[in-house]
Figure 1: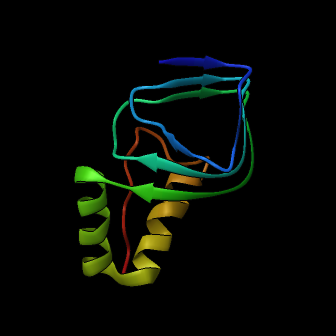
Figure 2: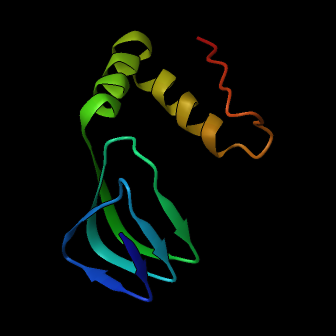
Length: 92
């Protein structure tokens, strides 16, 4: 589904399979299971994530393998502008 110029507040928002453009999110729970999602020109204010499906299992497995520090390194890898090609190298 496509959302444009919508305001979401105090609700659970499913990201998978949806497109959000020029939307605002305040005090929401973002639910994500690893499916396609598009977001452009959106604003966020106080949100939390709930992961589901295979994505949740994969994140839990990474946590079991690498612990908290390893997970933080993975997250930093995705937010580091020097990372290219979607590949992350974990150093523990």
